[in-house]
Amino acid sequence: MAASSRSSAFIISCVLLLAASSYLSSSLVEAQTTPPLVKGLSWSFYKSNCANLEKIVRDQLQIVFKKDIVQAAGLLRLHFHDCFVQGCDGSVLLDGSASGPGEKTAAPNLSLRAEAFKIINDLRARVHKACGRVVSCSDITALAARDAVYLSGGPDYKVPLGRKDGLNFATTEATENNLPAFFSNASVLISDLKAKNLDIIDLVALSGGHTIHWRNKTMDPKFAANLKVTCPKTDTTNTTVLDIRTPNAFDNKYYTDLVNRQGLFTSDQDLFVNTQTRPIVNSCAANQTLFFEKFVFSMIKMGQLSVLTGAQGEIRANCSARNPSKRSSSYLSSVVDEQNGETECF
Image 1: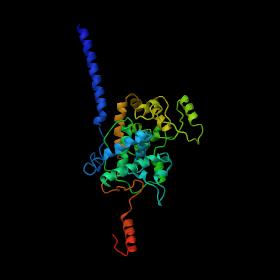
Image 2: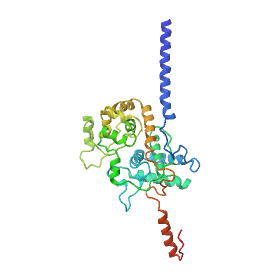
Image 3: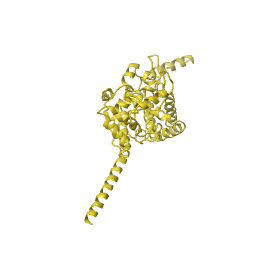
Image 4: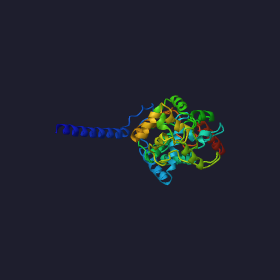
């Protein structure tokens, strides 16, 4: 009888322990231990001058994604490609100018969805109409990336705000040198991200989002054969998805694909091959809550790379173009006034 009681007590203890562990894991994303904030950013930056900012963005994106959920991936990639090149300053949104081609036309960015740029500028117009020109395009891009994650089934999380938009876009060379290549192995990626103060956990958590086809040497042969049917030659316009299990849902199945050697790119599959990153891949494949927690932390961390704040940068009136300089505005005003018989320059 005593032995039976001890056995029952042990079972109850185990159940309680598992329940507590489950609760702790599920609450981690909600409580979210976040990286330190960069000076100038705040969790409530627009509380006084654009309190409805996040509602405006999310409400519109719900409409967009209901029509085409694929746009969620496009917006998430846009934030990545912005932040990895001279920081999260909205420079990827700028069109080229007389000074040279913009970041959009660099080879790694040619696969960015044209619709993603339009969505950001549309959100900017809605926000500025409601609040005036007080919210930057780079902040809107960060919020759109968060909502792309959440509205496709991923975790919801707070985004520190207060970024300013950059005055210049990066050169083609700088863009190509700073964006991780889909053919890079894990060792190269680890080194590249370390230069940006991102570690191997950040690398694994943030990986994915490519849209270019690539076959790698460690791919499952049957999976590779099936891809050849979809993409039989190099000049094909056919496309395929990175996550073959749940392509339209933000979940941890991407890591399940890697464990099964069904990653599309070398930069994906080698995360499972590399001895440093493989344990993290296995953990994320086995525990979606853990993946969500790590993803949130790494996204907030990445979203603060070399941000412009305070008196730095500007708030663009159009996300794809820099604001006219005061000098240019004064010159144009002077010309117009002279044509009207006035000479005052303001």
